Length: 394
Ligand code: GLY
Image (cartoon, rainbow, N blue to C red; front, side, top):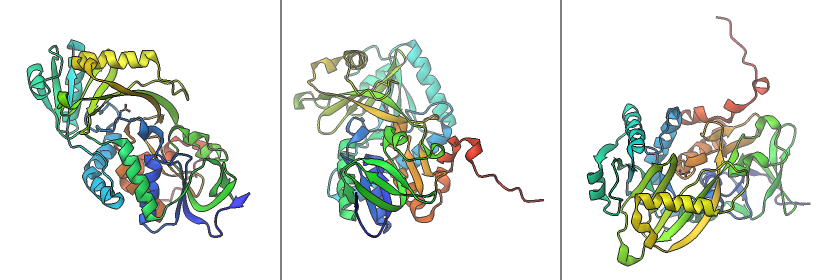
């Protein structure tokens, strides 16, 4: 067994998806000696995700607390992108293009009207448009579109470019990459103290951040009461190409709920058109299925009939890290020294900037900032394992 360094790192990040990378980058910027372990840093769900920054159009009843964090992250995006592009010298494909959510039938229209009411109650900006107004904005929409919601604040980024830029920024900030899997958490005197890697290297670290997406609940050595309750939620996604002669095919993200399933079309500036996504609870399966591709194309075709003319260039499936309440787990666990940054479910790309900032605070001060209090992993800890609070006499 090899030991990588005499002196322990300040931080070891387990998992090199966009959440692990942003955590490592921010930690290194704060002067912490940081290592990261992942067999394919920059891989993971970001290689599949469409990259919508959809705080407003993906609002759901009962998720108002999550909305606050989503909006905080959306507000940070322009400055975050500018800083990351400067630090990495790479473009991230950020596009402030807005979103149009449309309805194809009376049921969809009723659903969108409810979403509009919820957005207004929540103080969010969105505008109801008639079908004709929708088609004036996006002429490729189907003639049957019955109405829609224009949300000018929901933008997009290219998650593959985001991951690549974060990887470069990590390297430039001095993060040490171990291109291998973390196999087992090291626990010394009831404290996380590093990890044993699959290549036999033992990394010692004062703090360990578990940021391994849907795999975060599977790291050996993590005590039961600190293990994050995340599960994989499969998403199949298609990539098409808009030939220059067809451009501009769509000028903003277009989405709808068709027969109860979400479908969205995200047009990149470089001509890529991303169509997503299924949502399937099938364990660790990442097979692209004929049924998944068929349903996405069928629903996307109902929205924008012209897509059948476009070359289909890629089909892929990834795993969202789902949590019991669809919100992330951020901050210290019941095991001292073990910190979580996982469970981002449908919002990993959107929540990348705020996660980096929250984790930087946690790693340098040991405290969760107020904006992340509601996302402490302790909300899922078995009551028996929580420290008993001593009531002070009045
Ligand atoms: N936020 C989009 C998705 O998870 O499909």
